[in-house]
Image (cartoon, rainbow, N blue to C red; front, side):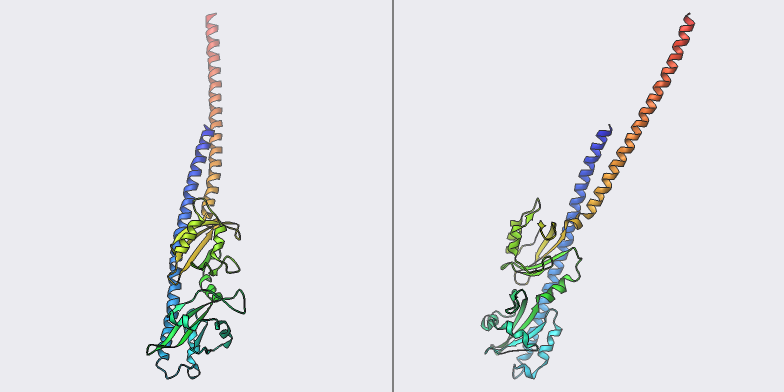
Length: 318
């Protein structure tokens, strides 16, 4: 009976723990989903604000007689009014460039004025600094158009280090934050690794049972939201992730939490249940020993009574 009870309690404990673990994972995915949607909206709003600011500046410049910034120093100081802007550069059709910090002009020499101006107001993909390998930037491009003719090109510079600090600074330490370009696979933000890598690294990840990395790659390339769990070599444990399109270019945002955080409460409950089962089984065994002792005691008393009755009967017979 005690063994049967222990088996039943263990089965109940396993079922309860599995249910609690599933609830913990579902809760984690819901929280991450809410956070990814919010972060995607924040990034989209910040980018759109900065682009709108540059468009307003460009519109004001068309009302001036000349675009040369020497006559309007406020052009460069307006970068402080932006959210992600680090610097504003004016590029003229003949290749001349003007900025408050001329050190940033070198990295813009590879920019195609014709292509960027034709693309209209937009934000670029990740571009590596020509002189500092491993240093990356994003660029806003807004044409300055007057009377249907492009007179210049405003360029806003975003340092990806600044971008990372803005969006990861308020995150819990255990939560990972990644922002990547679906097409190129280049990471714009990666709080897990020290260097910005590429999504191709996902192909080598080992997915947790019930998930598949091929589906993750298809979702990212197609700009579709989803969730997954895979083994992180840097963390040496499974990471539960949710990814969501940002709505700017082909960017995708991915938030994740390690398994020890996701299942922390479930493990605590499993620990409590395990000790509860041990305690309950011990108490039940002690109860059985007590009952057995009481039964043996009753049998002995009955044997004594029966012996006395038999003695009286034998004496009366003689």
